[in-house]
Image (tube, rainbow, N blue to C red; front, top):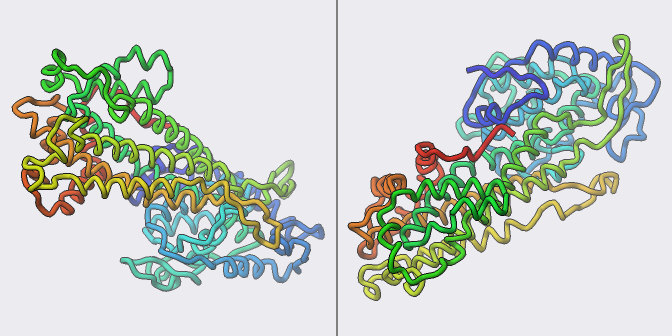
Length: 517
């Protein structure tokens, strides 16, 4: 299904659809007027006598160098060539799709001064399913994501490369095969294409969309661990959470109540259990995961605003007659909002994994869980989940290092002209290994909590949690004696990542975790 881009009006659902698969994109007809008016302002400035940054001057520290009218197009081409200096693995296709779509929508707001052909080129490449080769490293998240966006643009020009079936191919060949003419740049257009936060924003959205099912799975697995440890559902009492008023906490507590409703295991321990309070890893789940949910919801709002923003420089404000207006230099390319949002996401992702690791540690500690040591039926002869927990601890520790805020670092660039930068691109890019780590911690917890349930038979958990248990058992058998466990961890982690566990929440009368921000 085609998605109509109405500049400044992206929804989170549209961005998620573009991220998930190829959808044809079309520009709303109302955008044509503002595009033409801003392009006319730049055209007039390019043929005037006044120096205008990025139109007839050099860039950055070279802004005092005046460029002749004969070289204005070459100036833009040289800008793209000189800024295509990225290194590292290429960005994934979903990230590049978002970059193309967001850059087209941003330019179409009519404040960048580009001709319609520039936006048409971005949409044509996207709609043909072409993926420009964009190295993942080389941006400091200020003056825009210069290197990655330059690589994207170089492919549109036919001078860069495209990713085809996992291989790099000359962009000129791929464009020719797709029947797309290489873009030719005019005044300011190269600068408009590479100034902006579309790479860091796309990377942060990529992480947000990938973490959605992981967080939902964490709720199901956390509830299963509560029942496996014969924990109390008292800490999820709505009165507790209403008194605090934190929205994520209230929603998460409601989800835990729904997941645990009707559990025979819980009912069997309502009488005669001498434990007064459960460990924090069980009873504080709404407080911890709810706070993470609030942080992620805030990040979604920031990223949606940024996806709809105009973030290049200078900006064009058309006024009066055609060609009349001003170009105003500013700093919307500084990606601090994205950096801070990504740093908040990093902490949330790490904390979801950290509390899950603590639940695993609780389950294998017989003095706390009152289950067999290390969840082994014949402990001593069998080590059970002893070392699986060590893996979870290693991953949780890695996440602690990765969660260090990237935004507090700044290295001046461009001969100190660009003296404070956001590091947003790394802030967003580093979220992928963190999601990988947290997903595996949750996969290990799923195996451990399901194993614990085996020791409580014939008692059953709630319907929702028995569905989760049965889903795991379609891929992983109980571990009643030691065996090669790494393949089971991978299969359990797939359930965490692919949305299979998250779908269990859809069967319950619970609040939606995500929303149009």
